[in-house]
Image (cartoon, rainbow over the protein chains, first blue to last red):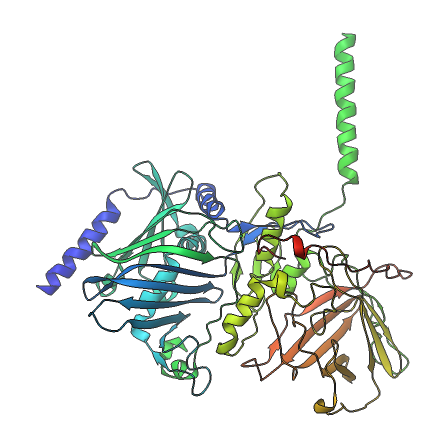
Length: 285
Length: 310
């Protein structure tokens, strides 16, 4: 019975992606669409301050970001009140998700810190746990590696970076009048395909993931981003979403109203504790 | 007929004028890759490389965004290629798609991001992570060099002038007025084999107690005895304690000078941190002089109404 449900979910997901298969795009078309998405987010920057006789092209300036919001998240099938705090980086690829959930059992608030970097995933009892003896505990969470990395790469900035990295494998198409970018992820997320939908301003408003392998079916998600603006205290002209809604199997697992989103490459670090490195699978080391 | 002849003549003149203007347009560098060395490395009578000279050949060592991006470890090699030196990661390049210039606000915001996009960041103890982030976030008020104070070591980077003598070297770092207000700084560094004064006997200063030695062809400058009232890099809120120890390495190759600094401060850092190597170019004019520094006067701070910063 469970296998039947799983197969149905996979077929439904694959079906959703197959409604309108992407047509092959020439490289200029693909580059133009991705560039438009990068520009809409404010990822491409150059500056002529003090440049003398140098005139550099723009580069992707998104590395570290931090955002805070509140809303609900799924806890054993129930939506519970959640304070949501995310620190992330793309160089190296890393993310720390801190959640304080209240009302799950009517009891005390649940405080979790879930961290990932490259091929390591771990839980922290406090931010930076496990780096200094006696300061918190870092617990390896290798089984959660893909799910955590996927959250990073399905953020709008991760989509643009990963679409560029996928090169010729990235396809551009039109669905219902909207531009769609489809590409496979690689590395630890090989076997996952991402489909991103752009609005008329080239902002990424919907990101769907599909797993080629039934074993990765739990990684099939749909995330909606809306209400974009520059909501950082240090203004950067980088557009960030004001609301994030993530669904899995049709059920909402996260619904967050963003309060602040610092996009000025703040000091955020994600060192891997020694005990996490020691317990990671052999192919991670 | 005469009219069309005038039009053709005018068009031809216009083309010639345009060509002349284009010919006068200086060639613009489209990368911030370190300069390639050329020429021989001069040596002093004792056989060591002679580092003496005016090291401002790139023209925009302190204020220029291209060099600050490179200092941050992001090398833009061409219109299509960029990478992070520290991590090796490829950085996407987006050719300029507009000829419209940026206004000051756009240029400053972009510069602030560009200067911080590299991955080579010192690793502080976790209890200081929030503090470092907040110092950078509020750098308009918190940056100790913003109010006409010396940049300190190693934040000063490569000196614009080096004078090398038998038993000491002299470094000069011209101050900057205007937007980045810092004070002129100099260092007279013994090269005579002496030992450091015990740290507890030193009063902390901006440049600390520096002692130089040769390791092969590399000049190593070892410093301690600092005041904690400096940051150790140009951006980032990278504060330090009074026990900071800095090891700088200078290596001359022809007309280039490569510099790195390693910061050790076990009070606040989990591990020593080494800057991305910086390369300065010798001023090509043998008779070049350092200009007088502008008087330093901080007048902007009281007028700032946002947290946007350099």
